[in-house]
Image (cartoon, rainbow, N blue to C red; front, side, top):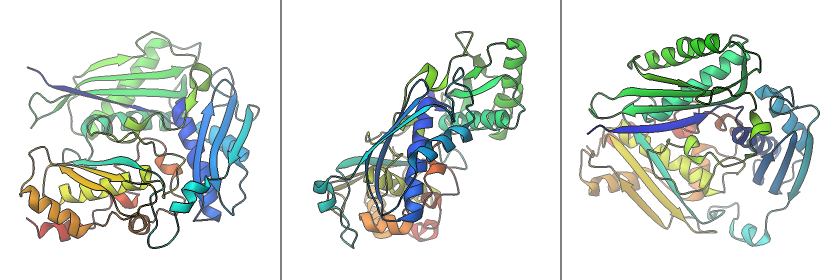
Length: 378
């Protein structure tokens, strides 16, 4: 019996990702002026129209419309016929202050409470250098490279809206290989289909496979419907927080359901998910297990998690009692401790809002600074 697993990713020009980037750009703009800003910012984009709504409580003064247009220009849309017009689209800002009921339980002191109840997961696996699963790492790399080539002017006919999908064959788990790569890439109405598809295979798919020392004899699918001219918010409504599996682990790990983008660090949907990834990655890198998934749960206004659960999928090198001991003695999951350790009051969030929140060395939750401390439990 063959064993396959598939993950997808989307480019920064995908309508949902446009909205994630706008929400996080606004969050960063507030944090630059006010590190203690409370932000829950949602964005909708459709047919040359952008709505920004949600709750923000801050001393900062931010021109949210300017942030919207800046992101749209940065992504590369310049025509309402291909997605959205950054300079002439309608932008509506509808923001209010955070609920007093929430603010009452979330105070900026040592007992800082969670901004909401919820369940979060963090995950790591040792099959790639980034401690991410192959399928999601490859999927991110494909659309990231395609977007860079388009922006550099090297990817003829391409428009910003792109999706990738990678199917890995795990029939031999010690030697996984690529089964299929699918890419759907928006293009000009007048284009050379053969030239376009050959470029995608030879300049995007094959280089990414080779970068990961994987096979190049995979099945290739490109724009299965034949054409992909209408894209971006012109083709589909975009919404913040609708790509939570793309943002996390591509389906390899469970997900608590909470989105990341547009939320400041008091919202544990985001900060605790980052902390769970940090702990899981360090435990795998230390050799305690080949695969670790950590679940955390919180109650609104409470500083400590209600529960902590660890799953090693039978890959643990020490007993689960030792796994829990190592976790509890090495990491604090109190809300303020997470924010302070990972420096989550800094405006770092726009960079998370495309090509995944995990597996990028630039972020504090990707550091491997607890490995030596954890090795003592082996």
